[in-house]
Length: 303
Image 1: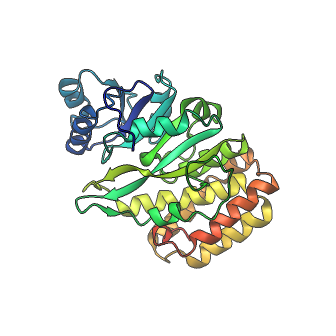
Image 2: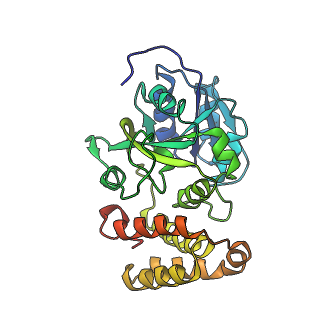
C-alpha cells in the first residue's frame, strides 16, 4: 500500500441510497474522514425517511441529487454526469472504502489506459470476514495481459469497484431496463466488447455491513430476472437456451423464482428488440465464468 497521505483529486465517490438514512449517514461520515478527501455525490432514490434532508444538513459539502423517483442503479448514471475526475468509486449506503484505497486504485489505473476497473476485496462487518464472493474474484479462471494488476475479471461488484470515468461513459453506464440487481454483468460485458479490461486488486479493501432493511427475497427476484435478461440480450442463441434451461432446473422451486421468471418473460419484447449477441471470443470468456461460478457459494440462487 502506498505511504503517501493527504488529499487526492483523482477519484469521486458515488453513492446511491433509498430509505436507509442511518446507514447512509454512517457511511458518509466514514467517507468524509478518508485521507484522500474525495468529492462525494449522493443520489437519493426518492427516500421517504428524511434521508435527503439529513444529508443536506449534515454533509453540506457533498453533492446531493434528488431525481424524485427511485432510479435504482441508474442513479449512478445520473451522478456520473456530474463527475469531473478521471475515476469514479461506487459505494452503497452500507459499504465504505478503507483509508488509502482510493489513492491506490488510482495509482493502479493511471499507468494502464486500457484498464477500465479495479475491484476490491470485500470484508463483511462487524466481523471483518471475507465476503463469499472474494474467492471467486481472487481465483478467476480468465486470462488477461501481463500488465493487469491482478486476476482478469469478467464482471465486477459496483459497491467495491473504482472505474475509469471515460470507460463508464463510453459503455453507456448501467442499462435502465435492468434497474437494480446484478446490473453490473451487462455493463461489464459491454466494456469488454469495447476492448476494456477489468481486474481484481486484493490490496484494495471495501467494508460491507449489510443493511438490516435489506429484502433478500426481493433482491433474489431481481437478480435472477436480470441474469435471464443479460443472457437473452448478449449470449448467442445456443448458449442462451442452455443457460436458461440450467437455471430452470437448478434455482429453488419457490414463489420468488416463479416471480423472477414471470417478470423476465414479460420483458421479452424489449429484450428481443435490443438483443445484440457478443462475438465468439467474448462468449468463450462468459462460458468459462459460468462454469466456474456453478459451485460458488455466492451464486447459489442464480445457478
